[in-house]
Amino acid sequence: SYTPTSADRFTFGLWTVGNPGRDPFGEATRPALNAPYLVRKLAELGAYGVNLHDNDLVPIDASAAQRDAIVGDFKAALSDTGLVVPMATTNLFSDPAFKDGAFTSADARVRAYALHKTMHSMDLGAELGAQTYVLWGGREGTEVDAGGKLLDALAWFRDSLNYLAEYSEAQGYGYRFALEPKPNEPRADIFLPTVGSALGFIATLDQPDLFGLNPEFAHETMAGLSFPHAVAQAIDAGKLFHIDLNDQKMGRFDQDLRFGAENPKAAFFLVKLLEDTGYAGPKHFDAHALRTEDEAGVWAFARGCMRTYLILKEKAAQFAQDAEIQAAVAAYRVEDAELSALTGTFSPENATALKARTFDRAALGARGPGLEALDQLTIELLLGVR
Ligand code: GCO
Ligand code: MN
Ligand code: MN
Ligand code: MN
Image (tube, rainbow, N blue to C red; front, top):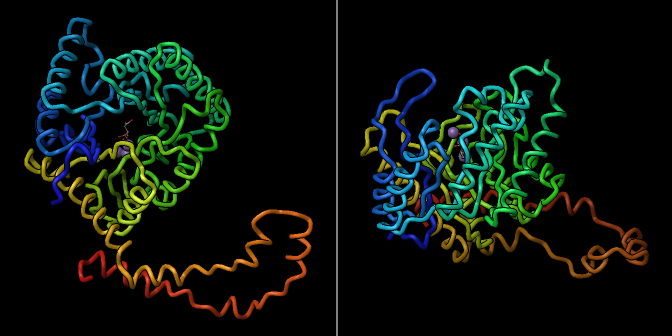
């Protein structure tokens, strides 16, 4: 019953299940798997779609003929399996040309190459049917600020995003762009490090409606922030265009753990938030199997991400139906119709009346809202004893 179907809209990146286990200290521990094979395996497991960077599929130095052959094989696997490509993105981080940034490089030639590469990658994404275009500025940042480009970098970034939005509209692609914030890794300080930073930046763009967020569980966690809180702010702003699900220990290097593996309680509140608010976009797992694993471990990882989501979705439904929990939630919230009439809308009369009211501060401070008991009920539900 926790077996996913395409209706669940679970997606994986080619780079996730295709991750061969290389890390900064050691070589790959698994052989590379080709894209058509990954597509067939993901379809077998019940995924809905697959996402990609340009160079996950087409090597950066491929000829036009090689590109067409590779894309043709990939499309054949998609049409055989019914898997879709809802999201595409650009690799603006692997090539040494991008070592000091892509759109925010201090070298105008690198910035131009980043635009050139992204437009070609947008063409590929559109050819594959992608509607969301993710922009993860992995190399957009610094280790040292002696170059003095902090304000320039933001201006260059803005110019590039405005340009790409115009390109998308001029080509008729109709992409929705999703910015993916991350605080650090691979740069010491990445620009626009959190969901809040990206939301603030979007408001400064020429076509802000075309831009939203692709928040990632691990990234906000690395910043010491709550992912459910960040996602709630994105939803509130109408900006949750896409989502990267994984897990992470706070304060560690970027781990990309299986969804729900490390912080199941935060994962539960996240799933509850997505389900309660009717998030209808793809649920993308941006993570990979532990470096210790062989190919069987890769599929155990992929199955586990989806299975945990579905288990937590069931727990969220149980939370909504549990009479004791719902009574505790109801008791936590105190309504006061008479005061709400004064605070709901400002008028000079309401303000005067509110200022004239007296409040029993001692009683307000003395009230116990019952959160200990409610949280324990939640834990017991998650631990399976309710
Ligand atoms: C990371 C990022 C990437 C991006 C991907 C899509 O920590 O490396 O999460 O996996 O999501 O490049 O743009
Ligand atoms: Mn990440
Ligand atoms: Mn990562
Ligand atoms: Mn990501």
